[in-house]
Length: 227
Length: 83
Image (cartoon, rainbow over all chains, first blue to last red; front, side, top):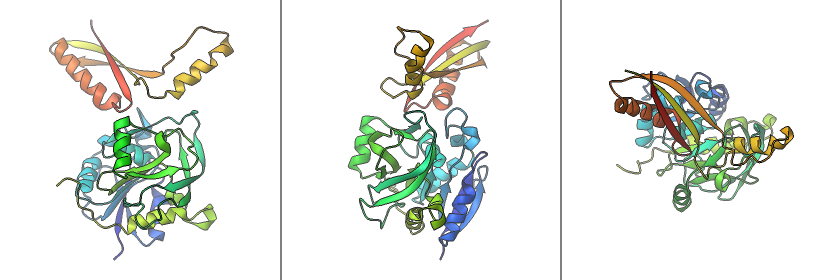
């Protein structure tokens, strides 16, 4: 049976239709879900798409964290359901504490919109299961605040627990350890700055994003890390 | 009592501050020299109604740490005034 995916929409989200189209193209039943809705019972997985939730006021993701749906997303994730945050969605997951660290302004202060080469650094997450470790993917980035930062202890834990999902081959934004995407302890919550939904059609220059989203759609419910 | 709060938020020491670095690097274009250690940040002003200063500080502290700053990368500093 095709998985049912809820794509969250905040005021200011702008990649929800790209995500919807990509997920449906891969066979999923995907529907938009307004940030004031709190019932996720119809969904097997949730995607938090890119954009500028609540205008990115204060910091990207800082206000979205308090949207009514986010408590439901935290419960959903704690039960082991797959949750994917793309770009602004990654920022929202970090601000809400569901993923460690933070995304800050790019080194060089440039807004970067460009294809980007990524390396699969872990295959234990719901986004990268079944992929080849070390394989290279071309997926575009489109952000101003995409420089991943965390303290040394967090970085050591991410490395030791195999939670660095994707690294940039040519670090474009000054991210610590070239990190492009990470996951939580259980591997069912993943955030990444690149946009896999924009690399799902040969017309867009790459279909590597479809590899990631297909892996995500194939994910099973995972037992929570701590029950 | 009404209190006026000023909350300054800036990146923690050791966290790269590309905005501050860019400002500092461009000061010579204004023929200004001798300026160093530029750190960029933001300031927020708001009023708080509370019975006393301690209660007001507790509210301002919560606003500052839970919303205005991200403790992962930012510090905040609070000033409180009455009038």
